[in-house]
Image (cartoon, rainbow, N blue to C red; front, top):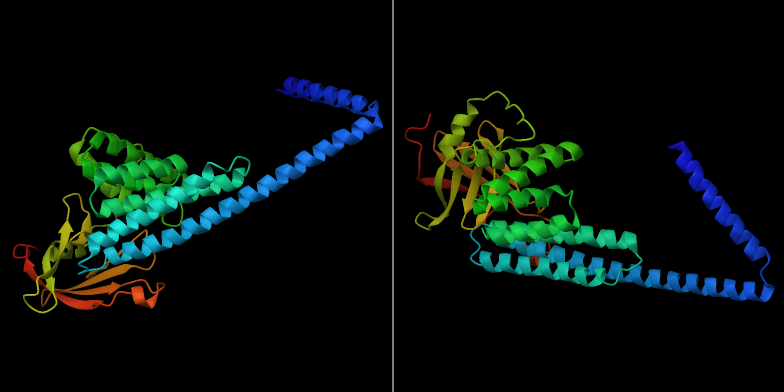
Length: 342
């Protein structure tokens, strides 16, 4: 308490007094030499600090360039009908790893630039988290989980790698570990909130509900938010489930809309998956949380039983890399309910 702090101050004051007396009795030539050594040490430290900060900024700039290239490759890998999707996703993963490796190399030399080292770790966490998302898209669950863990070692409070770890563990059907990861993410979300807290909460509870199907005895640390009044629009979610063909008849260009038993609705074509949220009675929307500006909207027309599909690729990418295929088309049902759907 107070006695301890006063005693500490007294010891400090005594030591300072002793030092002042020693310096007062010090020979002027000795003092001059001591001060010169001190100034040299400080100048050397300032030079080393400047070098390390320059090193950190260079590594961060390189990693950012690789991250943006990785994002472009990831976008291309998620485009509908892209025959090179797997190659693009593989390239995205390689670019994110290369960026993380550049930051790893810099970190080993940042011995005194503490704040810069912290920023490097945060950016490395982002790259590992992005790489984890790529592996989730490819359903490489074990690698996705390992990359998410790498991200959390660098930034333990980051929500996206927490979610991605939970998603990967669900994919592995490691239910106990998945429950712990998702519960921890819900706890972190409750503490931090944030701009996208509501969307993240919905996604985490989708995972939680799936986990509860396998582990009904698991008790979550937080209560699930009460659902809004269940509206008749949910009947249309059952109607849009199925396989849908777009393009010329017989082209076999198809995607699928899936409704999981725990309520998750998503759109899928080959390795591409987009979680959907209802925006109105007959419209749903999905957006990549990792790639800003990449949006899918679908609108159901009950009378003709078709889905009008509107795909909006990002606009902030070079023209030569922009998607050249269709962005709005009508899809016809080729399989799955709705004969008995309400």
